[in-house]
Image (tube, rainbow, N blue to C red; front, side, top):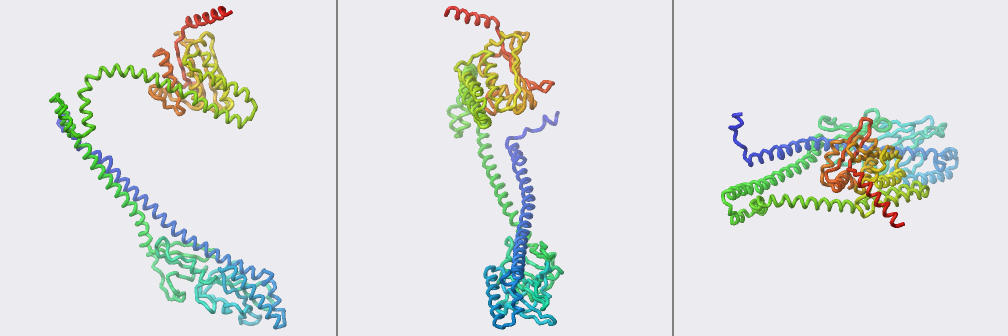
Length: 585
């Protein structure tokens, strides 16, 4: 205890600094570190995904090229304009007829090449039986007329062999290409016939990008037997035989296996790869550091704008305590908020008692104004909900039972739109019946009303539109689709009338209901809730009423209203009605 008494009180400045460090700077630094770590992982995954997407695109383009070459070679074998009629060339003995056939073949092959820019140098190659000499059947082809070199083998696919990338067999150009050799199935008795197809003019080079995400990658193509066929950083394919192996520890490797078991590899320099990741993270870190610097600057400005006026305000308070004549010194503050507060201090003591009486009167007026305001919005609110139900019902049922529906609707609207604020318990129950009739068109409700053993209590006076909001909440919030809702009326031993609204469904929280009832403003979702009911009952009965909610052991939610009941007034009221009827007769 002595230690606590001897401790010096902390100044306001030290408290603000501690709050700033603990509540602003430290959390900002922690968030910055977490964001950088998270951003690093996101950026790393983004770069990896970008590289894999580019590799996948190259893979898809090369696969599409090979599929295209396969389709063209198949047509050259099966198409009746060239492939199926190739036997005529071998069967024809006339040189003139053969020349015409070759001219026709040249034109048809030219049509294939023009119609498909992805392929070029289509050639029929013929190896006569018993020889190894290769004969180019369509001599007009720009290809050299030799079988592909086996060192250029890429993969075997069905009855086709792919080669490359290798330098084209074209006599008039030099560029890397893919080629296909397909065995022609007909005319085998005369020798071996092959269909040779190359990729289009410099088309293969267009498929390999020079950069990936601003990095300089290396694309490798390996054959199905593991031979290196292409390296994008080499200008000449002949350099493959002398190029040393790449130091793989300096690269990030990505791989895609193609149909036929040949592979495409993409090597990204590790330095460039992580530099790309760090650049993305650095951009965010600079942004967040700028935000932290801005927050620090704002905090300093706030410190100056709060603490300095506070010290001046403290000095003025001491001056006011020491001297009652503060009018000449108030202007010296030159801070509007503090000046106004100081000016109010000397008025506060004299106005407290006056304000207490004024607050009570204004509270009563405000209560009446709020009730009028709520009454003003009840009818539009209810009309909107009812018309929404009518729209649903009309769409689902069309004209069946519409007369019954509209009759109940008219009764309820006439009751709710009445100008008088007072009614009887019987009228309230009738209005609830009409309301339930409407709701049963939309919901599968089981509803009942138990009026008890004392019919005279139905004449008890009560405010209008009290039960319907409670029943509506019971339907909407406690199992509207297949729930059970009931209203029970009882005469208690203390002479009061108890009205209980019961429903099954989601359990209510009595403590939460108590908190809701003590609030001055209505916070229900539709604007008409228990606060409205409580305010109406309070306005009518003062403190002589009860409104509570509970969850019973049998699983029922119960909202109970207890109101006073004077049987003498009921009897006198009924007698005056009878006397009036006799006098009219």
